Image (cartoon, rainbow, N blue to C red):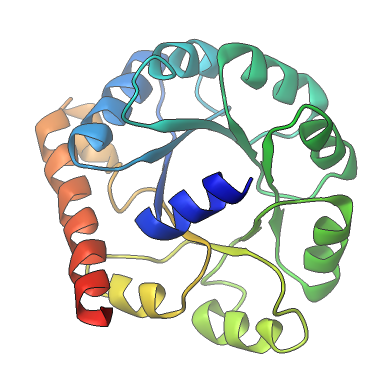
Length: 214
């Protein structure tokens, strides 16, 4: 877990891919990898998501995870396909405990102090604040960190090229990006090069921010 957390903290960005077909999910993921993204989550809302994960897990450039994991059955399918971390929009005690029993990184979602602490106590490695903007965004993070500073938070929602520096300044465990890179019109047009360029723009923002802090 330490190496995963340290690596994510260094790169900051994780991309969640939600498309209508596994082929589009895989191609979008490869485009993100070309752009320098190192953590990619294929959501289980993608049909045959496990097949896309299986293919992507052969790409040594990325650490592949599964998202929208709502049950232990989903978790088992994801792990069998090669996912090395499991992400959920919610906190489910059974899913977190199963994930940890299998020795895999657990990233459940939570949006209240009670949920966050329950997920932490259940063994979650990183807590995904979701939906981040709707629950108060960076102000919520600042408020909840007061009593719960020991939690590793992932910020899920609202990050754009224009405001990513504010997200980076929050010094979270990571930032989950979705449609800001995986734009539906680009996926529909199968413009993988444009997705790669968007990914690269985000990666460059992280690099510039890190250099400015050094």
